[in-house]
Structure formats: C-alpha cells, structure tokens
Length: 184
Image 1 (cartoon, one colour):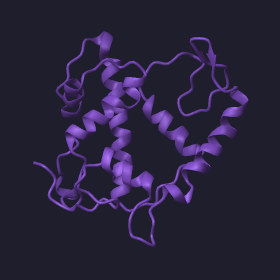
Image 2: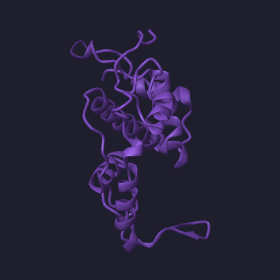
Image 3: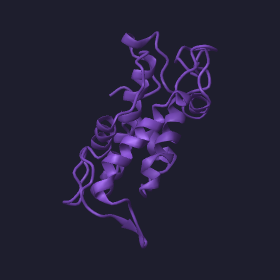
Image 4: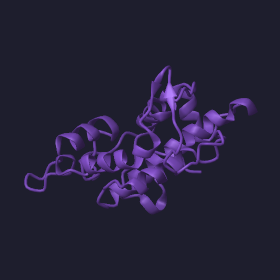
C-alpha cells in the first residue's frame, strides 16, 4: 500500500495531503473523540504500514485506517474537481466506511441511521425517529451557498478557506492546485 503523501506514477500531477497533516487529522478526528488511544506517531506508522499492535488492540489501527481511507477518498474528489455536496445517503456511506471491519454492538448497523435510543452520562440523544429529518436539515445547511466556493471572486467561502488552512496543506489553493511544491 502506498503511503498517503507519496506520489504514485499515475498521480504525479496531483498534489497529495502531507503525511504529517493527515496523521494529525486522523488522530484528532473521530478516532480521538471515540477514545482511540493511538499516538500521532502510531498513526504515522499505521499510514506507513509499519504499525504492529497486539491482537487486543488491532481495532485501534483499523479505526485509524478507516478514517485515512475516507479522507483520501474525499481528497481524490476535491482534486478531481468534483462538486462536493452532502446527502443523507452519503453521510450513511461515510458511517459504513468509518465502521468497516470493526466489531459493533448488535443494534449498530454500519451505514444505517440508528433506530434505537442513545445517551451519554444521562444526556439523551435525539429520538431515533427524528434522526433522518435532522440529517436532512444538516445536509441542507452544509450545502448552503455560504459553504460553497465563491465563483464571483474566485475564492472560497469562509468555511472552505478555514477548511483549506486547517485540513489541507497550505500550499494548495481551494481548488487543490499546487501553489508551491509540497514538502519532500
């Protein structure tokens, strides 16, 4: 497996995310929120294919790998110039991708909107029957023009400018074209 951040012969003209940034993003993304205890260095080793975990902790590497694969899929779409729009089905597909090859409890169905009640430390989540409705509203809000590139000025919206500064290597413009050579 080619490590993210390295160029393949077929993608020499496409910039790729810098490995250190991707390791930080994977570490700070869902995996950390969900209690994944891998360090940033271990995430880098997972990206390089050199991480060795005991069987009891292999799920931690799989969690990180799922996030990296989801990120790389989005990266390819952005660089390919495909319009980015969320749908409820796409969010469900991301959920299936993030939970791929992980053991879950019987009521969890990767890629499906939950149909059961949830709560954390006495706080209840939204009722299951409202989840699809709420996801539709979230999608509508995120697909709003204020989150899309500004064609008139040739620059991205405040959301995409922040996303580009924090999640994409700063040497790339919002369209994904290189403004300078990425770090070696």
